[in-house]
Length: 343
Ligand SMILES: NC(=O)c1ccc[n+]([C@@H]2O[C@H](COP(=O)([O-])OP(=O)(O)OC[C@H]3O[C@@H](n4cnc5c(N)ncnc54)[C@H](O)[C@@H]3O)[C@@H](O)[C@H]2O)c1
Ligand SMILES: O=C(O)C[C@H](O)C(=O)O
Image (cartoon, rainbow, N blue to C red; front, side):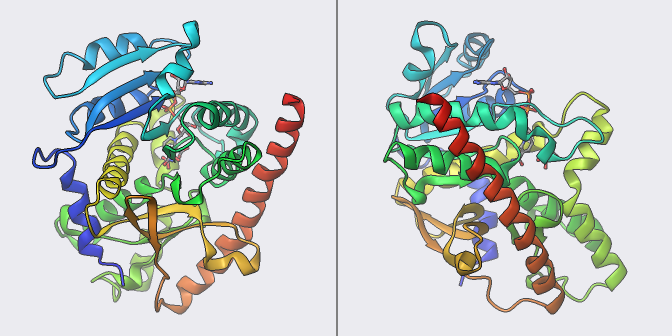
């Protein structure tokens, strides 16, 4: 059984100087709202010794800036010039992809599909060619579709490793910790909520029944769940046309990257919920699903079942599965057309 406490410890590990590791991490979309603070946090991570920052524009400036921070890693910035994407990717142990457009008020994540699907598919082709063994962390929305897109691209190149492809749902996890602490009047750093399903609206399923606060009043619980599911909209609305979550997302992305690196380096009991190629509901046609995963030297080490959950959570998961099936299929269908055009 996974330990919620263990997940919590993961979030504090990344800035520890005690571990000795040498990992190359590349960020694709490094000049963006997420890419810049994520690059900063990766520069502070002692497991990272080689940081490659790629973007269509601006990444050399971000690289020059963070390279002055006195941690033990080299940083280089790349643009498409001089085969920059290939050079950035070569030798990467972890590739993180926040490239793509963010939402504006009134949009759903699925509204980003038309733009971001091609961006992510093109970047996945480059990963397949230049760093096929890397662990790949997908942040670009809609995650429920972009992760299947990357899987299909990698399959088409014969380099798909389901143990190394992760949709980053960590923002839902950290939001849940914060929001539940506001309701329960507790220390958010000590709150851990397992969030499963996918990364959009009703596909985000926080398992409140597994927390210490399972008995909170129904109306409070309903409001809490709704806030976790639609936390992204809260930020989009507040930014009023200037984009979506970037700073909290960078925090979440850096935590997930650190957990993947910890697993690669052989640390034990590293557990994060993440959207992966998951056997849990495959028999029902849901190929990808976020559940708690123990990370290890090969990426995914063990996928945990959800255990006993409340009846209302079963209902939420049933609804999530129906939406996920459609989101996943949309990604698969798109990739078929995308790959056909490449020939
Ligand atoms: N998974 C999550 O929880 C989560 C959270 C927040 C945002 N997001 C998503 O992350 C994405 C990025 O958000 P943002 O706020 O950083 O957006 P942004 O517009 O600030 O930055 C995106 C960056 O991607 C770059 N880019 C575009 N196409 C590229 C390509 N082909 N190669 C390399 N770089 C490319 C742009 O130049 C830009 O610098 C959006 O799709 C957003 O919806 C996901
Ligand atoms: O809401 C968004 O569009 C960005 C992100 O997925 C989030 O959850 O904040």
